[in-house]
Length: 109
Image (tube, rainbow, N blue to C red; front, side, top):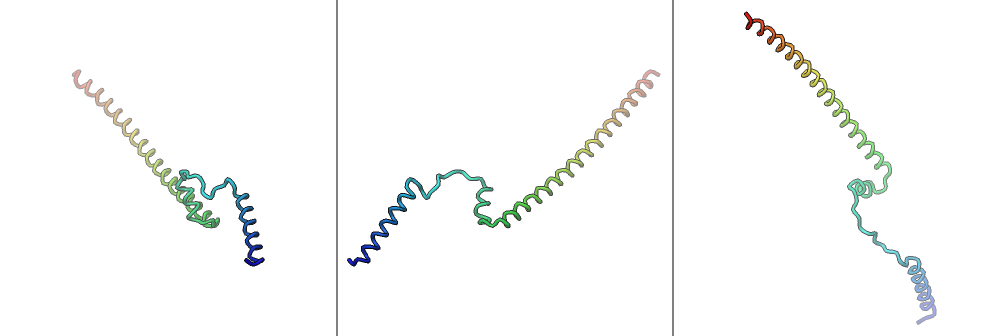
């Protein structure tokens, strides 16, 4: 072997030894763990694009706002319906009370 080849091999061996010392005890593979769907989407969907992630978050907020508005409107409609029902029930109770009173008078005659 030539002198240059021997020097190259020594340099490579030295670099490999330093690399082995540097990465001693470490592993390329993280321990597996359960990830949430949101973590997976965040990691792979946007690929580090902060603008896309921000746009996605804004879109999700808008969807949530629309959903909350629909729920609020449905709640108001249900509340109005309940109030109308209570009013009708009170009127019916008064009518039945008056009817009983009238029937009692008629039966006495």
